[in-house]
Amino acid sequence: RSQYYRRLKKLTNLPGDKYYLYALHVDPEMATSVLALNWIDQLDLIKRIKMQTCHDVKLLVKEHPSMIGVRNINFYREIQAIPGVEICSDSLATEDLIKSSALVISITGTISLEAAIYNKPSFLFAKTDFSSVSSISVFDGNLDLLGKQLIMSEGIYSKDSNEIKEFLADNYANSVSLTGSEIWNSDTKHQPKYLDKMTSLLSRSLNEIKDC
Image 1 (cartoon, rainbow, N blue to C red):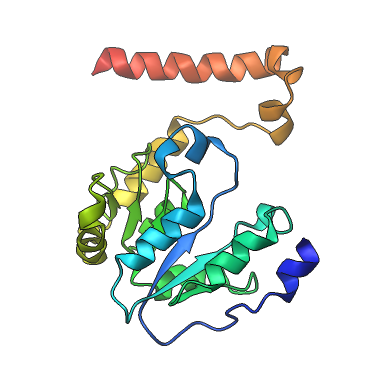
Image 2: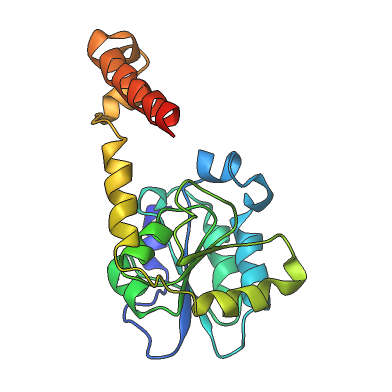
């Protein structure tokens, strides 16, 4: 599958025309299977987005690096069959795609937070712990008005240059440093070092709630 993906005809240069960027999620993952169960079918969602988008606006699809070689090849074939939709080469930097886009679209992905860092508008299909950032719009559930919502979202930028800095600083202050093995290895979760980190985080969070 990875060889087929490499052979796919993909966009290798940033287009000069207006475009929306849709970032594919890992599948399955909590971001879709739990937080946005209604939108777990990403192929169907891509079709819906393009149907509601102006004909002169391209929809670029960027694959998640960890999913290369995992999805069924028919998934990509169906995407390429949609007029006005192109798959981006993984050689195209996501940062550059974000900066040149008119709108970044995701189901619940942190690419919207990345877009906010560059003060680019984005659109999510479900609320997240970062969707309160002013440049991030959230779908209201009305599919008939999806196109209108996307257009309106294009013009929503953060007016406060410190907003994203304060959000990230608060997020960092309420975080703990964990390794991948500590997160995914069930054995490490019973070790004192891990428990101390989580206890400290919980204690800080409860104290903040008490002080509110």
